Amino acid sequence: MRSREPGEAIPRVNPITLAELPLRPELVGEEPYGAPQLDVPVCLNVNENPYPPSESVRRQMAHAVSRSASGLNRYPDREATELRSALADYIGFGTDADQVWPANGSNEVMTQILQAFGGPGRRLLTFTPTYSMYPEYARNTHTDYVTAPRDAYFGLDAARILAAIEAYRADIVLITTPNNPTGTTVPVAVIEEVCRATDAIVVVDEAYQEFTDTPEDSAIALLPKFGRLIVVRTLSKAFALAGGRVGYAVAAPAVIDALRIVRLPYHLSATTQAVARVALANAPEMLERVDELRETRAGLEEWLRLHGFDVVPSQSNFLLFGRFTDRHDVFTRLLDQGVLVREVGPEGFLRVCAGTPAETDAFRKAILTILPRIGLAPSDTRDQVGTKRRVREESR
Ligand SMILES: *Cc1c(COP(=O)(O)O)cnc(C)c1O
Image 1: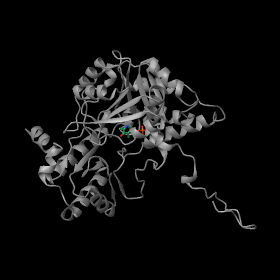
Image 2 (image 1 turned 135 degrees about the horizontal axis):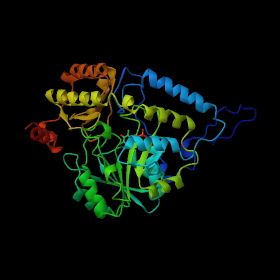
Image 3 (image 1 turned 180 degrees about the horizontal axis):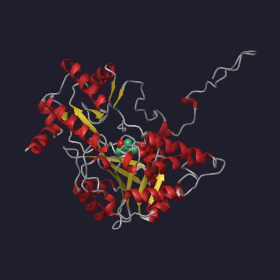
Image 4 (image 1 turned 90 degrees about the vertical axis):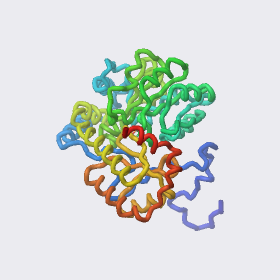
């Protein structure tokens, strides 16, 4: 660095650059997670529930926060005992509080799982295309990260999962169902077959479970049989609480004990716990738009197909659609119309989530406006991802 002239003012902000800092080598050149947070009229890019909590729930939350503020000079309940009981009641399947572990979003839960069971010399396996945060948890916890491809329909069967575990000698396998960004599911029977045949820790990310046609078909049902199975859920999506930052693991009490070893002390603030307890006490109301959003997604799926798009059959609140010769061009044209979607997933596809009726209308209008000017890939390319054939089979 250049030395300062005598009398030259010291800058208010230190001019050191990131390149000059002794960053961990594996972090050099990395960028922070960056789904764009833009101020546009229609945000359909991060799979949020578009409906805020009701007036009544908001009032209860304000009251609970105000009450908990009288104790904010004290550390919160480290074990989040009341919240864990409330979560256990909500989860069902006879779950007890000692089988539940909440943290600041399922992102933190999954990072804790890797802190406890991953680390140097251990390997995490996921199936692509999938959630873009997984490699970041692995990197942050010094865990090896490997991927195997899903099948042509973005599905997974037990043979494919077990072959990849074997080939990579994976210590932890992460199965996302419904998967982000494809919306495709993995049957509970497949997860059971995998658990039966492996010693690896099996993590099932059910972030979108409540949006499926059969939310009761959850891997949580398998927990009494498999001690190395961990099911991860969140209040961020169906539960309409993305801003509250609460996710949770459901697993054997011993697994929860492992997570309690690595969690930061007092990781979940008193305010977060209070807000989440109110949300859970009002579960039916918090979830009341889920059916509507599922129908919106189904309607949009149909509409996009009718307009010549390839759409991956989804069991979630979002859709992967294409197939574009230049998806960035389509993304930009939609943004020019005030509609933000996500540029993610296999080449040529975009992801859009179900919004309010007004937002979904705006999306459809924007698509119709740009349709004459965008390029769709020829149908033989489309068949490669299998969605066309799948659609034909389903419509029989
Ligand atoms: C949105 C999402 C989550 C939720 O993350 P939170 O930290 O709970 O907000 C987890 N997994 C997948 C696959 C997701 O898409």
